[in-house]
Length: 450
Image 1 (cartoon, rainbow, N blue to C red):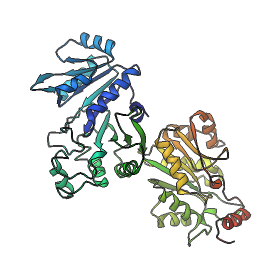
Image 2 (image 1 turned 90 degrees about the vertical axis):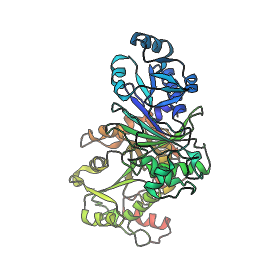
Image 3 (image 1 turned 30 degrees about the vertical axis):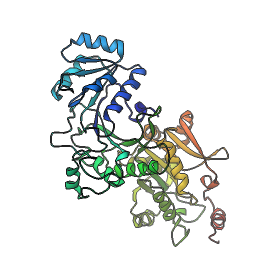
Image 4 (image 1 turned 120 degrees about the vertical axis):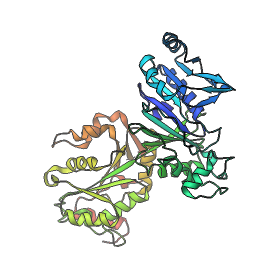
């Protein structure tokens, strides 16, 4: 995956890179990538960089040049670095007060800003005067390198290590653990310090291996970082690779449809016994938790108090669908999507009568979404689409706008070219319960007797 896609860069963005472990490399790689895509890219620093790093830029100009000269350079080179002065082997950039003038006067499409320094170390805590993020910033990218794992928490390996120890008491000299990296990056006074309120935040774990144990650890760190609602996503990758981003972990939710009347069953299917003294609903919720789905909402309707009690036992939130009796699946999905928190990027549509749901299948669907396979991801068994289906937020308004006699498949069919199918080896994605005989048969197949 390219950097532009991973960070959702669009014309008009003002992007500040902060933290440690690859800021300059990311700025340079992103600048070249955007320029190759036809955008006019202006770059600068609000702190300072080494003079040797100017050689990484296709073209550099001092701020004293006329706006016409800078515009002409952008037209010729597409990617231009601006600096204020060169002193003692350092390149100094403009102050934050100059940024609005650059935005108003220069006809660039994107402004990239290295807004932090870290002496080439893989992790940092800012000092009181850092970082220097302009208030016009629309995207902040906090960066850390995975090479810091296992290194001592000291000034030789971590910029301003004492501040991290003072904040969390990890102990100077102790080996750095995965959760420590996450806590630093998501902390409002450390990794997110100075982030403008309106800016979106996508963190970057640089030097993540393509596969193996450290890739799994990077995913775990990303999940810890995403405990902050301030962070929209965490990119995993290596900026020096041809395709630098392997995946982007985002906030993923699940809407569990549990409002139906279940007329053929005579009682709500979700309340039927399943296994280990749990109902079907309780079993489904546990499977979603095992798959580490972060935000789960159960949509209630018929016998709502009993369904809610089941969800409450597991600490899962519920929302009542007042149209459950006539609205079918669509009305419940609409209510559920509207109940998810704003940071959720995509939602799994989970059937409340599909007790064979498996955590590994849910994980495969979420992994395909994180790796950019598609904006809609569905499991497929023998060329048949199953559930749960993960739907990116960009399609939610279309679902919410469907008429009462519509169905979620109307939107899926409209965007069939955006559906990525994950081939699975189990028919559990197709099996649900509609009748008492279905229920008996599914219990037998699960080894639960009649």
